[in-house]
Length: 114
Length: 113
Image (cartoon, rainbow over all chains, first blue to last red; front, top):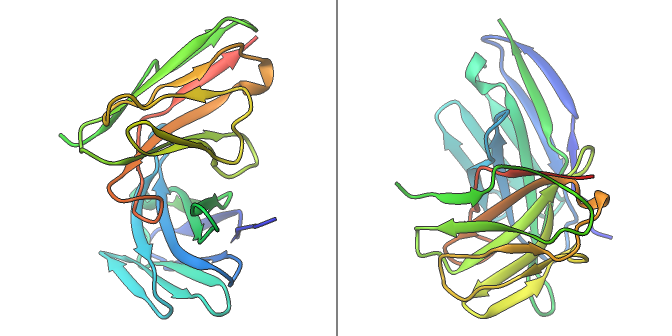
């Protein structure tokens, strides 16, 4: 059974501090890794699509790295702001024999404290 | 505005009463899929469609049907809903397949009593 683990499950961070969290996934048959940001009462929105080992992506204060050989990705938020409060989902896309498959982690819930 | 729409947003129904949740996208995306979100679990894929008239089962297809007669629409049908289908449902589309970023609809919260 393919499993995607995100840690921590929940995180409280003081406004202005930087933080990071992890997505772990199987290292075989890797195709892509997605990060999504999911605010309460809204729908998930894509942050990054990562496909190559060593990929680093950045969008404003948020960045992500990818290590496909060891099966992990980190998401970093620099100088947290209240609007960063959300659940961050990662999704692992694996090559299948017939079709590719997507497996979501349970998410890291981030709370920014004023 | 590029978007995925779903209707209804909220629905309370009774066991066995057939229902359809509609999904429509205006981005000309080929790939569409349905997910359910349950407490303590990650999003799980129910069905997906690579293009018109091409649909396939995801991880949790039991109790659901879909159709893809037009590129923009991908309705989710529950022929005989049961309480274990109480969940938050998301429709999503992407331009090239599952490896591309998914654009999610607003979600439909379904309660089956």
